[in-house]
Image (cartoon, rainbow, N blue to C red):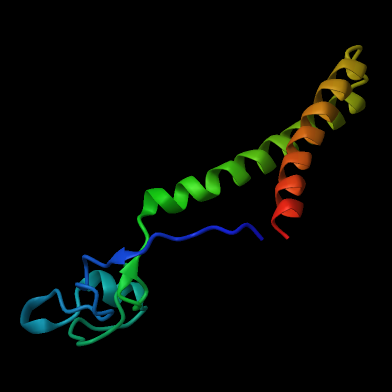
Length: 121
């Protein structure tokens, strides 16, 4: 696994408490009620839907920035493999070029991810 550090900040929705009390009279808000899959409108002290009840939240942009490189790498690998299969099925005259390009790029992407993993252990 990658050693990814999460930067947690006090949750602004629940003021770092962990339970939502943003509606009238200290009741939980409609968003937290819906996220906790509860029926009804008046609840007090249910877990905050933003931080999951721990009182600290990670910014959404930070979570996205940590996941995009891996998703992009896997997406490119699958598209290239699909392209090689299409070139083979349709007997493309450029199959050897497609295979050479795809193989090099797939090897580079896989080598990057496995080399990072082996350096961390």
